[in-house]
Each structure stands twice: as structure tokens, then as C-alpha cells.
Length: 362
Image (tube, rainbow, N blue to C red; front, side):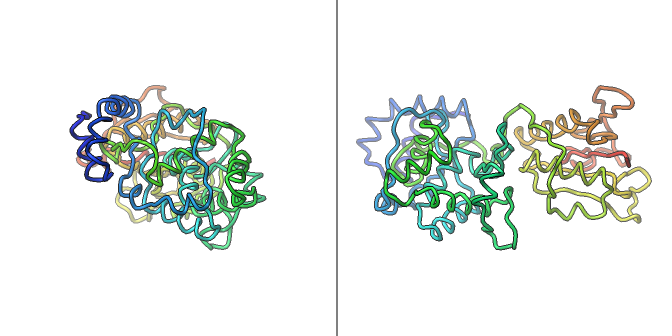
């Protein structure tokens, strides 16, 4: 990825409507910082269209205070692009609870980058807005009106955050905002990061940065998530027809890796692959990898495969296949080359676009 001062200046002129004189004076100072940010975090994209479509009138009249010191996260990771579906949830929740949508976006950015790093924290916080289960039990609401409150549902999480902020006094002026953010996370630097992000989304803070390839913006943390055997239902149609071990495995993998949105489970007994597939007996699951053909997607797929491998005993794993490699613990501890009975002529047969996990029956 190469970032040139001219590119940055042009993007600021076109999207930011910033006077050319100010840009020229600031480009020398800003560009190295942008280049370093992109080097450290190529997924710290900033959505110009989102930013400039916002105004500061709602934040200013609301009394949203500006950020202060110290800051930590926002010094290293500028505000990142908001997926359209998530921004819609921020805006609709903000309208219902009469708070600035930028404040909700600031929390979403600080907590999970709008769901991109949506894993259970070491403290046990869950969901896009990272609720502790006890707090969610008290303040969680049904944001998508499906008749239940789900800590892992994005709509429920965002609406619940707005509800919790209101109950914590966020509408009581600037001091109320500070108290509400303190209730959300008892950290001064966290509060300042959230406020900085909120004003960034209002177009009044931050530097506009674009990522090289949005497809690469998957969670890139190389550490593996924790494991809790009490895995909640995934609400995926892939659960239907699975045996108990495969069902438990599907739910646990989905809980550990929420970025996985598509899974394959039991197949019809008439499938021509049944003679060599555990899918037909309900003892296998395919976990489809988002953006599998990008470098980040491949790394993400291997994180999933290695996580399943690390918990193979508890999950009753028979074998794993990914990226034309197969791991069979009963045979060897090493990953070995894999070739599908029909050949590796496409990504599905070679298992490059999904992690296949077969389970023992009990």
C-alpha cells in the first residue's frame, strides 16, 4: 500500500471541502501520521461520505462535550467506516432515544469497530456494543422487534446501549454525557476516545484515511478467542438435522467467531457425496469464511481452524479441513495436504472458502 501526499490532498479537496490553503499548510505534518496509521492498521478506514453527511447541529444542541486528555485508542486508530446496515441502526436507535447517533457510533467504534471485532472480551462483555450479561439483563431491549432480547443481535445491542445511556443520565447536558460514559466504561481515556470518535463522525475531528481493500478488514488479532462450553443457539438454519456434537460445535464456533455469517450443515441422503461425507449423517459443519480469497480472509480462516483444533477434545472433533490441508488427530498431530475425491478444481472442493469440521457421534 502506497500513500502519497498528493493523493491525500486530493481526497481532502474532493470529499472534505477543506480550503486549499489549509490543506497545503497541513499536508507536510499530516501525511507521515496517516502513512504510519495505515502501516499499523490498514483497516482504519474513515468513511468520507458518512462523515460529511452528518452535521454538528444535533451534537452541539445536545451538549455533547468535546474530547479531552488522555486518549489512547483514538490516537492509534482513527474512526473507521461504518457499514450501512450498522449506521441505520445507530440512526434509528438515536432517533428513538433522542441521543446523537454519532455518540452511539463512537461507542461502537471504540468497542468493536462496529462489529468487526465482535468477540467476547476477557471480562465477559458481549455483542457489538460489548454488554456485560448482567447489565444487558437489566437494560437490554428488543431492538429488532422479534420478541426477544439477544445480547449478540446487533439491533438489540445498539438499542440497548442507547437505552442504558438514557438511564445513566446522558440527556442531562454535557455533565450527563460524561456521567453516562463513565457508567458505560469507568475509564477517562475511554470516554475521551468515544467523544473523539463521535465528533469525527460529525465531521469535526480526525484525519480522513482510506483502507487499501475493504475486503481485508476482518478481525486480524492473531490470538484465539476463549472457549465456553455453554454456547448459545446460533439461530442459523444450518442447525437443523445436526447430531448433538455437531450442533454444539456449530454454536461454539459461531459464538467465538461472530464474523461467520454462513454455515452449511446436514445434506440430503441422496447427495452423491454421501459415501465419503459426514454431512449426510448430520455430523459435519462447513463454516464459510468471509472474503476467503483475500489475505485477511485466509488468516481469519486459519484462526477458525486453529481454534477448533485447540478445542478438539472438548468439541469431539473427528477431523478438520481447510485451505487444501487436513488435520486428523487420531492419525497425526500435523496438517497434511488434502485432495477432494473429485479433485481440487475449485475453492469449495479444495476447502479454501470454508472450514470443514467433522464430529464424532458422541
